[in-house]
Amino acid sequence: MPRMWVFAAAAAVSALSLLPVGFVIWIAVQTGWETVSALIFRPRVGELLINTLLLLALTIPISIALSVTLAWLTERTDLPGARFWSWLAVAPLAVPAFVHSYAWVSLVPGLQGLFGGVLVSVLAYFPFLYLPVSAQIRRLDPAIEDAAASLGNGPWRVFFFAVLPQLRLAICGGSLLIGLHLLAEYGLYVMIRFDTFTTAIVDQFQSAFNGPAANMLAGVLVICCFGLLGLEALARGNERYARVGSGAARVPVKRTLGWMAVPGLLLCALTAALAIGVPFTTLGRWLILGGAGVWRLDLIGNALGQTILFALAGAALTTAVTLPMAWLSVRAPGRIQRVLESCHYYVGSLPGVVVALALVTITVRVALPLYQTVATLLLAYALLFLPRSLVGLRASITQVPVELEQAAMALGRTPINAVAQITMRLAAPGFAASMALVALGITNELTATLMLSPNGTRTLATQFWSLTSEIDYVAAAPYALLMVLLSLPMTLLLYTQSKRMTGQ
Image (tube, rainbow, N blue to C red; front, side):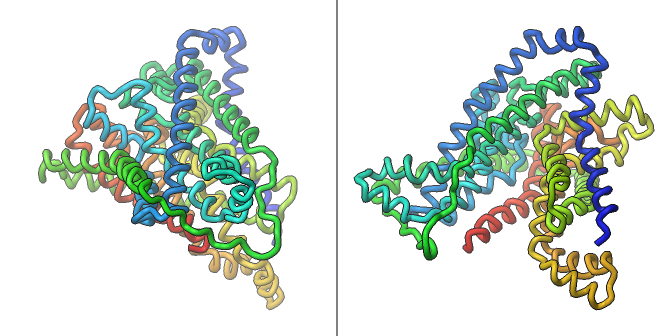
């Protein structure tokens, strides 16, 4: 395979992924230290930083406790209906975070501030922890727990000193994902009236288009993201987690709950009621109140059509620009490949508002004809969802033996034809799943769409946001319902993939 053009394509995408952070740094240099210090070291930034730290410090530990408890109950005990409860624990991912807040604000209008932000954040994002923790629990070797119990430890000590340390990687990874979502989320906290860096950046952009002020807030937000990445790496450590010993790990025996089954069922039912019951009940109530008149098929059909069009175009573009990097990471690993791959991954840790703000300022200053065009919006989607696409594509290509490509070339096919006719065809199902994940991510994306979409753009997310901003919750309900229905396949895919990874 001629690799020069593959490396060139991957390097070009990596350079594009560096635009947001590079632009924030460039703006800081152009602005000057005096102005930068005045914009950063002020009471407002300190208030936003305290709000952000409190949100992270409260939401992540509560999510960890809830997710680990639910995962243990559904995977390692004889809890009645465990498979049903495990599906309900993942189902909140089908509801966008800003729809969760819409449902809660509709039900409890006085819910706002830090308490409201933590409550809705936990209910919206705890499945990101539940999925990896439950998958890890299914893979644990019970022999380690038996050894700990044989040394005289009770059930609680066995759990905290033998089981919980083995879940560190899953907990750290899920916590990092939740933390990055908390830093990036906009719609949820605007409805709850809780100020974060993201809400402040969007407000600054929409009210005064103050480039330096918004960019300096974006710089602080980027530092928070990188700080969170560093904390996760520190907490993860370098310990070995692989099983050592001969033979295969035996299947664990389900623990009998006895009378503890009642509080276990109550916890599962309460979590499902708050995370799933409230959004669907609220949507149902507003739809009933609105009746048939709320289904304005012309407007809803237009928004649905544009959403699907953007989702498909964005998924196709993201897959195309990620393909060279995915092929290199499998077929030509090395130091340069790892550097390029890290550039693809880091952009996924940036909030959408940072990426959108960088593209807005670049197009206004350098390429004004591209400002608020479909091309700029699709580029933002591609940058935001590069990691999601890369993971799926790399896994698909890995499953295709390189010997098949070599055999095809030995039979007379050119390297490009061998890859196109053999590798791409065999990896097509994985490519389709990767595109679906990107498309459904684009469907629920709000911040970048609000800031970059051309005039006249009407997606489900933007229409929903426009109507809720006018307190027209009845008219917004159909858009929220359609977003949930479009997200359900992604949730089912994540759940089945989690089960398949452990042979279930």
